[in-house]
Length: 141
Image (cartoon, rainbow, N blue to C red; front, top):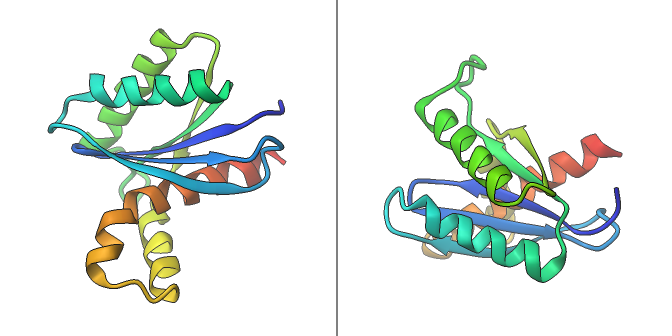
């Protein structure tokens, strides 16, 4: 499948968004979208915006698991969000990606870029979405 792919890191108040290039090779952070606590309909509207604007056909959504691999309450939240996306956008393929190490990896990237703690906090979800998307793009190749 060719075309842009969206990467998402869902939290209770934020949605980190990343997007690939048209060839589906390079991931780039797009936005840290903030919404009211657990107001996932706002997050879904933001996803719809990018899907429609950029003709997205695939989404990689982070699935937070415990280090043991067991599911968490947050995992359930992400699975429900996946179902909402699939219901609202039936032509879009949504794949869950294990995100156990994404925040740690994103933090390392930001530390290497010498960003202050305050700046890291503002972009960490977007960077985690980049790592989720990169993981998906690598698996797809």
